[in-house]
Image (cartoon, rainbow, N blue to C red; front, side, top):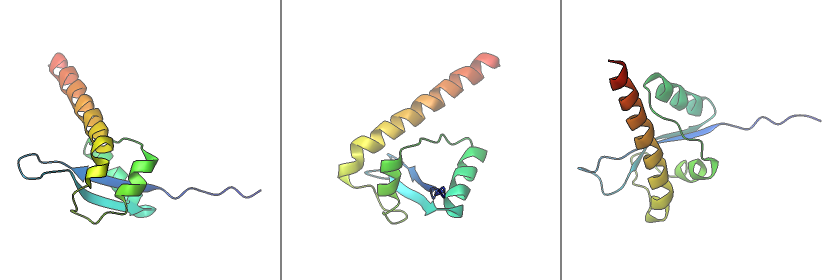
Amino acid sequence: MEETKKRRVAAAIRYDGSRDAAPRVTARGQGIIADNIIELAMKNGVPIKNDPELVQILSKLDIDEQIPEELYRAVAEILSFIYAVNSDYRDHSQGLS
């Protein structure tokens, strides 16, 4: 039996509450583009959350497009995860100083 390799998909979002009403898609792609998005995030310390269903939806949006209202709850969970990771990192870094 031949093993099928799943094609990697990635999307990046940004939320600037002072400028935007909702988070925006800042990058999306499949294959090597997805690998580049993930690599860039890792190099810059950007938390990565694995959510296959959400990334499939986000990957259909245009770059710089605000997420639709139907995705607010799912994206809020992702942003909550990111804020928690950032907070834990800050707390840990300050404890080492």
